[in-house]
Every structure is written in C-alpha cells, then in structure tokens.
Length: 636
Image (cartoon, rainbow, N blue to C red; front, side, top):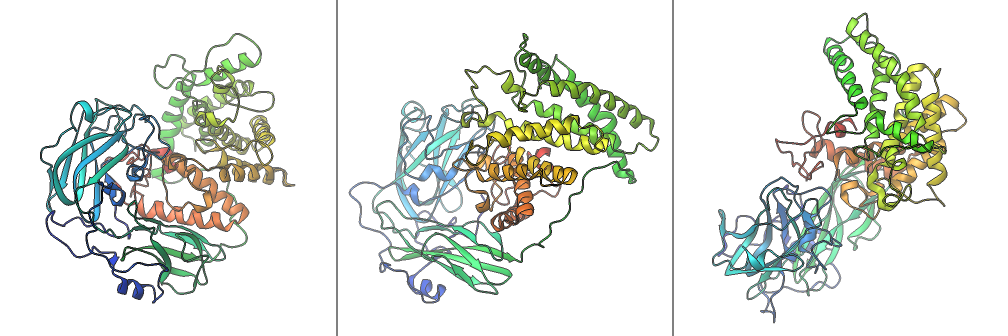
C-alpha cells in the first residue's frame, strides 16, 4: 500500500520491545511548536503508555491502518474497522471490502502506531459482492519485527464456526504483542472474498493511542476560489474526541481557514505558489500530524480555447499513416461485420437490436434485446469511426479507397435502421424499448442507473457530430435526430423535473460538445440548454460510491478513483464545464484530478486504470506490471 504524508505506521518494531513514538506522533511541546504556539482547547495532559485494564476487551482494529493485497472497485477497505455491527452478510450500509472474482487468495493487514496485545479476532464475511461466497479457510499471522509468523493455537478460523454467514466468526489464539496483524483468506474456487468487519480484541491493558489523522489528498486551487478540506481524525471507542487544528506549514502567501478547528473546512490562498497545510490532532496527551500539498494557481484566461472539429484531412507521417491504414482497412471493417452478425455467442447485440426495436415501435411482433444493455454503443461508435475514417485522404491508396467505399455503403444502410429505433419523443436506447416493463418500468429511474441510458445516448450524439462534419452539414439526418434526443432529455431531466444521473458517464461530455457544436452551427445560443443539462447531470452525482464517482460533489473531488472509464469520461465532462462556465470549484477540481492521475496513477504507455480495483484506479503509485489499463479509459 502506498504511504502518504499521514502519520507514519510503525512497521519494524519487534513484538516484544518498547519503541519511541513513531514518526508523525509528537508530544505536547513539539505540537505547540509545530502550530506556532497555538494550543487546542480542552487538550488533556500526559498519560502513561498503557491505560488501566478495561472491564472488557476493546476492539483495537479501530486504531489500525489497513492495507490489502487487492480489492474490487466500489468497495472500501476503510469500512472494515469502523466497529459497526452488520445486520447480515448481504448488507453494506457502512461499506464493505471485497476482492475481484478469480483473483485467488488475499490478505488484509492491520498496522498500529504503538504495540498492541491481542488473543482473539472476529470476522464478519460479506456475501453481497459480485460472485461472493464464504471462503474455505482463513489464518492470522503477527509481525515479529522481520516477518509475519502464524499465531499459535489458533482455534475457530478453519472449518465450522469460523466460516458462517450472518454472524461474527471468532478465532482465539495465544496472546501476542505486535504492531502488525495479517488476515490471510482462501477463496472458494473462483469466488470473490468479502469482509464487512474485522475486529481485533485487546488482551490485558490497552495502550494509549495517538489519534489517527489524515489530512487528505494533495490538490490544486484556482485563486479566488477555495479548497475543501475533509480531514479525518479517529480515536479509540470510549476515548474523548480529539481536538484538531489546521495550520499553514509553508507557502508564499496567506492561508485563510473558514474554521481552523474543524477537520472539514475550507481554505483560501492569497498568492500563487506551493503550500503545505497540516492537520494536527491531540487526544490523551498524544498528538499526531498529517500534511497535504496545495498548489495555488492563477485563473485561466477569460476566453477559453476554441473548439477544433474533425474535418477532412491528410496524414503525412509514415508512422501514423501505417496505423491509420490498419484501422481503416482492417479494424473498422471487422467492427462493421460484427455489428451486423446475428450468430455471435459472445458480444451479441448489434444492428439487430435496432431492427427489433423498430418493430416494437411499429407495433409488430419482435424479438428480445440481445447482449449487454450498453451494446447500442458498439453501433454508434462504429458509425463515428466510419465518419472519421471517411475524412482521411486516401492519397490514392487502393486498399483505403476500397474500405472507404464499404463505409459509405454501410452508413447509407445503417442510418435508416438506427433512426427507425428512435422513439417518437427522441429517446433512444433499444434495451429499454425492448425491455419487459415489469423489470424496467420507466426511463431514468434510480433503480436502473446501471442500464447505460446516458452512455449509449452520448455515443449517438457524438456520432452525429462527426457525421455532420463529414458531410459538411449537407446530410442532417443524424444531427437532427441527435437534437431530438437531446431535447427529450432536456424536457425530462433538470431543475423542477427529474433529478437523475447515469451510472456510467458519457452523456455529460457529449452534451457539452453537442451544445458547443449547435451554437457554432446555428448561433443564437440554441445549444445552451444542452450545456446546462450536462452541468445538472454532473452536479447530480451524490450519495453513491467511488466506483461511479458519486461519492462527493464534482467540485470537491481531488483524487482519481473508481472505475477508470467512468472516471475519465466524468473528468472530461467536468473539464468541459469548467471551460464553459468558469466555475472555480470545477477548475480547481479538474486541475487536481489531472495532477493526481498523471503524476501518481499513470503508466509511461499512457495507460490509466491499473486494475488494483477491478477495472479501476488503485491507490497513489499503485502501478502493478500486470495492469488492466482499458483503452477506453486512455481515450477519455
């Protein structure tokens, strides 16, 4: 796991020896010096290294720093040591941790800033994840200063009571004193491993812990705006809450905190440059510090860069000419063939879905939708690819000319088929048109966020833009249909209408691009409603998870997280809105996200989305060799 500038974890202490306070843990005198002599209200005096033995064991996991071997997107390791009591193994109200199916054995590690003594743990398994199942076995090991050593006389972790659902699975062992404990889990076949809670019970006297402090992600801020600080401070259950204080460590100008004593506050900066902010917290006479870096930048120019649309062009580079030829003569014809095939066993659902949807709209007998709910996107993307390929000057190359002739014919065949599947009010998603209304009763329903309504609609709009530029505006069939679709969305979603967002972003960036395009083609602000709707869809992402970037408002997201394709499409739409509206929160967020992704989560090949969290981003600097790096995320 990547270490940040948070309070450092002690990883080398022997399980039997006392150590000095770890890095990042300071005494009262050093704390006062670090904060310029400003004391925190209500700070307690010094305490002994060990508190008196409690009447009952306490859950030491609350004060641990977790790390892991691998996890699935949409799950949070931090959820497993909150000391919550799950209702059952299917719920995840407080969040859960899980691995990906087919990923094999996994481990979770706890690390403490001071040595702890324990002789019992409890694990509550989670079965609510994708292909989740109870594991076949689990083990506990303790760090001895050099390596992890299996605990002795482990009871209850193997078969029987250690592998049941809807309950805590308790295991006891000979007490050990350590700074690190590891849970190793063996999955059932190719199933995923899920954990809701992992408790570690104290044995004997409980140490006095410094608070756990995390200042948050490094970020950028545009001058005139504010950065949203969301620090985290945790103390052991039953211990008074820690007092906290934000403080400027370094930087060229003044920093103004809205409330320096709140962990969740805002800060403004007077001068461009690099700053370091520190969050300090003290409890029971022990203080911990965590810092983050902020780069304050001057606002961008008042006039944004102009849009460059793809128009007919020639390629002179031998390198790129060869690559373009391979795409035009091999790859795009292959995609055309597969979109037209009806006999596929894998990847079903091409042009045939549009044909059946058109039958349904005419009231004729029709077939069911084939393939994934997002399969329309393959057709729309292929239309877009054909349009872009037809804008390439073949320069007399016979193979390219032959492939382009094929594409012209296919566009003429496909466009009427696609438009026949568009519903009278402009809505277009064949999976919905052909769906069983008992299973998919209404458009734009929160229960159907995963059905890619905006995803496929956005690709249709982007194909229409490229078709318009290909024909020089002489063929308006797709352009007019895209306007009809966008108008349908504007009529149904927005302030005073439906409050909704798609689980997979794409419509947001498509609407901004289309709004600009319509304004450039027609003038008079005719595309402004589409840009406003894009902003509404972005702002509406809330109350969800990191997986689809709905965990925080867009203007408060500073780290690239979750499903990488969804993320980069989201960030692209945010950048477009930042350019169109000059919203300072959006400008600061996209600068921060770019910096985080390119400098901490980016491969030299240009790939993003390491796969440490399924098809998503991992922690900072988690860049494994066997990366996922989906091409769609790089294209974003």
